[in-house]
Image (tube, rainbow, N blue to C red; front, side, top):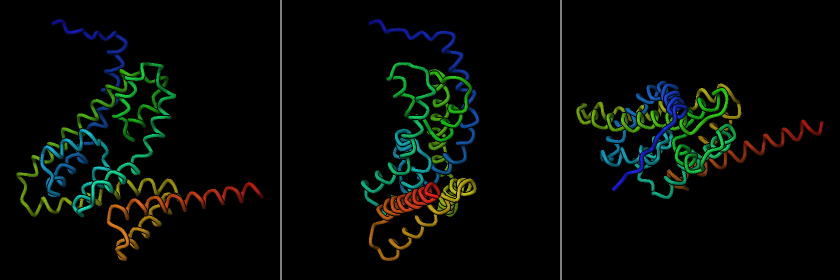
Length: 243
């Protein structure tokens, strides 16, 4: 039986290597975050296979961290999936924006590498001079993806050799991760501050009153705060326009 040989042109090989080189910094940056995820996944009660599978399939840092907190709280699968969807909904906009910059290539290639688009890979691809090829994206996304999955697995395995008290204390990294994601955005936009305060307030109300489960509380808090802030922004814009 003959296996078809895939031959890459010199241009495609060059673009792939450039993507790999551009993604090295991302791969190194993923090291502490993915490592911590693996450690926390173990303390949450996930198996090695479940931890690696989550990184392979979900491949979204913030969503995976949120999922761990929801799993620990005993939240149902529907709530976790919906929360992940809302957190990652920005990827629709990133993919649409990046599609305008990509070369006109087979849609199958775009479907394959679009799975690997993250905030970091999008930033590099979007700021790259000229158009972006599939070969470049496969190199860029590939090294970042491998890094995330590998260090998630490595973090879980390391966790087995750590004292139990140290494993449990790693849960603090979950909150540090969220703060690290939130603070830089808050510095750039007051809108993010309003969103964060409103969402935290709504979630606190839902938690104290026990109106909703933890997962649904996060989902509803996110939606309500987004709608309210967006309405306020539109009203302010309309007021300025009327003047």
